[in-house]
Image 1 (spheres, rainbow, N blue to C red):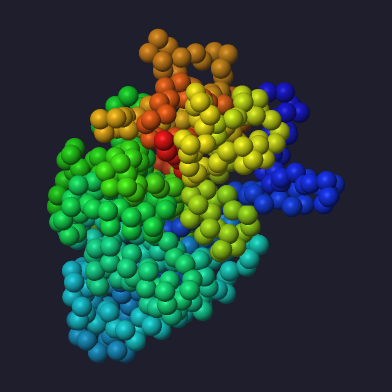
Image 2 (cartoon, rainbow, N blue to C red):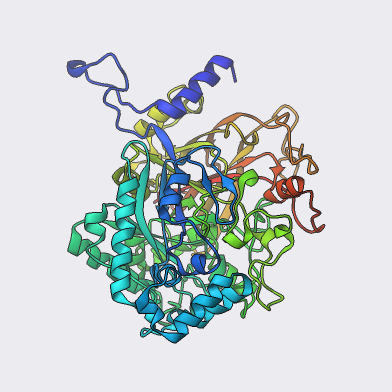
Length: 625
């Protein structure tokens, strides 16, 4: 790409937001009446603090105030006494502490008299304060509320009301429209038998509306349909809005994306289920600390990049290990395909989901950088032996090891401004994408009239919005002219401090006339094209690897700083419903385990990976006949 075009392309990604004014109200500035998102906003939609029962029991000392300060770029001292700061501030943060027993462990450890009046609670407090295995045992002794004990002192309504008031007030205090958004949220945490069907609930409004109704809890119901009913009650009561996003489904043991049987009611998946889920859950957490949820090699054997940060040995309890038949109901790509089939059968696609990434960190620290990774819990913050240690010290040989956790991920939102309302609206529209950590900028548009030159134009964003739909949008077959197939524009710009880009791919899924689903991965544009050509099998050779594990370093002597591509579906059938999403891959760079080994001078077991190909996933663009 010529230098001047490269410069203009970069500017267009960051700043083009306008439509052309009519002669009667013409102004010199082409951006004066801009109505499109001008820049991507970076955030974390899934973070736990001292208000979460598990985080507090396992040693976190940082509260929501510390989480907000850290996210906006300030230095903080971690729960293990280490000074830490983000490389670059985030634009927004959603603190999502568990709604069940929110703040109760923190209140117990602070000496709440109501809780200490119960001898069992007092004994548990002493154990938790000792830390380590004692803390885990102490918490387990009072965790009956997780098993449905509605009389547990941990569920004291007076405490819950006081904590929630403080929780939402703190979010309002740190919310600075235009500079930093502190969005209100919580995590609904049903974990029956260890199967995680968790959702984060995100509020569009402020503390005044959020405080009007206490959060819904798994103690009240473990059925997502009851959560959706609570969401409707909230909107009816307050006049404000909420949405839910489900976690990556790899710990659901085949229950996150059902297609036949409702795992909670044991009845069939029906029209009410698909319509209601589609109404309340527009986005999905596709990548986080506990593994990546885009694709699985068993489900996508022809995709050489499907096996990425894979966690698939069982659910949280590890009492039921994973079986292959569970996998198709856990991963995003399969859900997107199954959603097409459900729409044909029941009239609505419940899995028309946008993609976001987030951390699910229980440290109050939204760290998703390989060289700045503070782990899942305070007990696994940086230390010389953590990569070789089990996730939690319990007597279970199948328990995950810390090295299996990933430094992932972040949510990227194309919003018109940095406010709660604009970010929430962009999520509702699915104009969002996920990354495993790096802050690469990705644009993706679909339409019927794009031409190849539109992809390399300096005003790609303006052309994309004017002539088509962005990521998360829908292309209607009724709008196409005869013989037109969908055409796509995609542009990716590397994170300035991360690896160069390897390639940009478009993943297509579709439903044939017999009701069978299919998928195909297309390499659209790639780096080093002068030396890398697809082989006879259609596969592109690997980009190479410059990672120096010993020094935890790499060189950007391969790959590209930016990639721009145009794609027209060569296999398009106008009668087949389909979806298309973008996957952007970086060149290999050091994994957090390599940075640990270098910093502490520690030895890693041979099976522990030390390099990673970071990536981004956009929300799909759907085609409806």
